[in-house]
Structure formats: C-alpha cells, structure tokens
Length: 240
Length: 240
Image 1 (cartoon, rainbow over the protein chains, first blue to last red):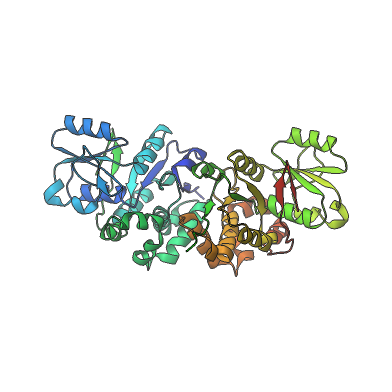
Image 2: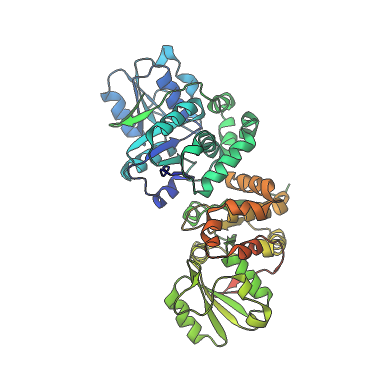
C-alpha cells in the first residue's frame, strides 16, 4: 500500500507555526473576499495579481508596473491613495483584461507570505468560485497539503472553514487525514452545503460587510466554480 | 435593555493573545483528561489540586506539601519521578480524600497560567463531568467569559470544542455571542450530543490514548455531571 500524502486544515495564521509546511502545497483561503476576487479577476483576463500587505508598497508597485491598477479596502471603502476596491463585482472582463492588479489585503496576504517564509513549495489560492480547479490540482500533485484559512485578525472564521470542508469532501479519499480541524471543517460543510447562502448570514464577517451593503458580494463568494481557474504564486505574483 | 456580557470560545492557547481577558472569567477546558480528572479528584474529597507545568517543580512541590501525592503522564505512562497518572479512575474517594494532588499537565496548565498572566479575574476548570456547575457559575457572575480550549500541542481538538458547545447551549440566552468559534462549537455539539461516546472515537486524541488502553477513561470524560463541582483557582491551587 502506498502512503497517501497528508492533509491538514490550519484554522488561523497564528496556528501555521505548529506545522511543517516545507515542500508542501499551501492553499490560501480568504473567502470574504480576497481569494474570491483573485479567482474572478484572473478568470476575466487579468495578466497577474500582485498581493501586497501594505498600502504604501501597493501604491509604489502600482506606479512602477505598466498597465496596472491598485486596489484595497478598509471598512468597506477604497483605501485613500488606491484606485479600486476588493469586490469581485468590480473585476469584469471589460475592465480587468490584460491588466495587472496590485491588491492589498490584510489577512490573506499575511498568510501567503508566512507560508512562503516557512518553505511551502507551492502556494495557490482557493475560494468557492474556483473550488474544482483547486481540488483537481491537489489530486494531481501527490504532495502534503495545508488548507490555510486566513481568518479575520487571526480569529477563526466560518466561511474559510466551510471552504476547507468543501475541498476535503472532494479529495479526502486520496489523503491521510489525522486532523480534528479537517474533521470539523468537513462536518460543518456537510451540515451547510445546501444552505450556504442563508447560513453565511450567521457569520461575524457577514455582519461586518453587510453594514456596507456587500450582501451580493458575499453571495457571489459562496458560488461554486463561477471563476474556475487556479491562481498560482510564482515570483511575487499570482498567475493562471 | 441591559447589555449582556460577551462570550467567546478560544480554540487553542495560541489564540488567547487575540483576546482581552482582563477582568473576565476564563474556563480552562482539557477534556482528555486533565480537567475531567481535576473535577473528579475534588468531587472525591481532595483538599486541593496544584497544577504544575513541569516535572521537576511537581516533584519539589510534592516534597514540600504535607499529605500530597504527585501525578503526571506522558504517552500513557506515569512520568519517572512522579507517583500516579492522569486517569480520573485513579482518584476514588478512598484514595484521594483529604490529600493534595500535585498534578503536572502540559496543555491545560499552560493555558491556565497564560490566562492569569493576561489578567483574567476568575479562572475555573470545565469538563463534561462538571458541566452544570460551570454553567451555573457563569450565569451567576454577569462577567465576560472565555471558553479556553487547551487543545493538543496548540492544535485544535474536537473534544474541548464539544465541551465549549455544551456550555454555550446552556448559557447562550444570557450572553452576547459574536464569535464564529462559538457558533461552530455549538453546532458541533448539537450534531453529536446524542452520540458523544461513538463520535469521540473519530478524534485524533482518541487514537493516541486508545493505544494505551484508555478507552474507558475517555468514555468517562464525556459523561455529564458525574463529578459536578466547581474547581476555582485561588492562590496557586484549585479548590471547590
């Protein structure tokens, strides 16, 4: 019997330290909304996406990158000095095709850089809009996998956990899973996969974003395979 | 309308830093098996329990404390230099009455000291054997509450989360709960409260301890209110 590779779910960036991610695949998950927006923009023809963890650097890289736009939000508004927001709805093909998106996010970008610093060999981004592309990739690679939930200011969140559960449901036969986080994530997904649109209204993040009228955005962010591409991090940017 | 106090669930000691626990109640949860053993020994007449985070200190305090015993396990065996193990089954009334138990545990004791260092005003221990005593206390105090899962080497575990969910089910009407961890914990408990004995067989900790023949111990540790006392930490020890 050939040993199957291992799969773990990491519920917060603060918990990444516990695991040895060297030579492994880390899937960065930030369902509301960074990784949903990344899949959408790349699916609509963006050349690449440069994820940046602070505003000043985002502005500087935007200036030095031809045919680029800068984007980022805090508290539901475009950050001063940047041009666009974090909403996947902003990145239609007619707008983003052949452009570079320089995107500043907090939770997701932080986790992405942590995974690289800890020696992950493959970093991709996952969200419901690209669920199948992520699962197909994990099944092809035959490597250990860490499903990395970006959380919110390091706090556990349900939407990222549900996405981890959706991945596990699809790939679990091909991995060794000794991980209570993964067992919980899959059970929470099983419990809610048929009512995702209503269940997400109970999450803390829903309440924060709904204040800014972003309900439609969040419903889009739990829509499966509507931007089914595989964003892969290579040399400072995400490409498909 | 009077504001209800807040309740949060902390899924790993590594996540305690995110929260301001000052002037709050922290419930230390280490279902397999420290906090179950603590409730049992105190219910059976132990004078007090001194939780210690390392073996040398445990031996020294045992020597300087009259009528005390020392206890602690690693990998299912009594630690060299200590006298007894971590099993609640060892602490019958005929054995432990009027004795001081100097107990070394890793995960639970670490979290307890972290909570004290961060300014928690009330530290108690919780487990299924003393579920009602914990809930009654939380309902009386009218303070913010943090349900602190001890986890296993900082990894999320299901048994501590299920206990947090059991507490939340009983007290939630009296608290403000904006916390995805708590929502998840309660749903996992609702899903499994009628099959706890079989569901725990899926947890990673079950597999580690079952190797050492500790199945009966773990079944006891998910038995509700069989040692229904309230261990409270005062001046370096737990008392009822």
